[in-house]
Image 1: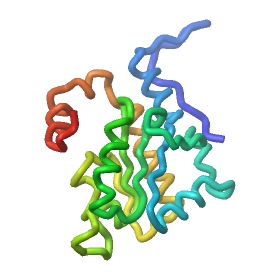
Image 2 (image 1 turned 180 degrees about the horizontal axis):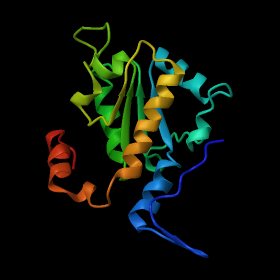
Image 3 (image 1 turned 30 degrees about the vertical axis):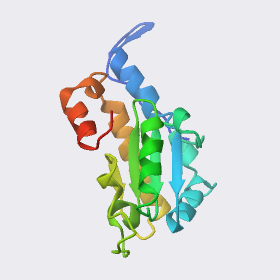
Image 4 (image 1 turned 90 degrees about the vertical axis):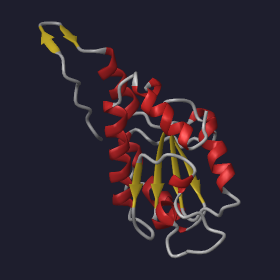
Length: 177
């Protein structure tokens, strides 16, 4: 079982004081609810990561959510056809803030070996991506490493980042309101 380090703070006899932002970041990082959007072989590697040998639940992600309204981590795995792109974007838009995106596998990251008219050449063309996990398909250890990178983002993100003009410009560049 993974132990969680206490955030920076002031300790004394019978008390511990820290900022609310650090406590919320720690809670967010250790209770991510992934929404797996798997279309091909990377989905099988995700299933292996969920299994007992790799056990993604050690990282607080044992509850995959199949509803975008209850998820905060969108894991896009596998080939995304251009016809599927609006659906991926709609799923992303339905997620509540804060939300993170993990692109898993060569196909989700860059289109992979499918350089054709029908395959989206990376999901970062339609939604912003926080973490890329390369590979064809990536090993479960790589998936866990990507999840830990998302945890680092969730742990260190300030409350104000989502309201910052830079973040609003990023969403506007993807035509997301």
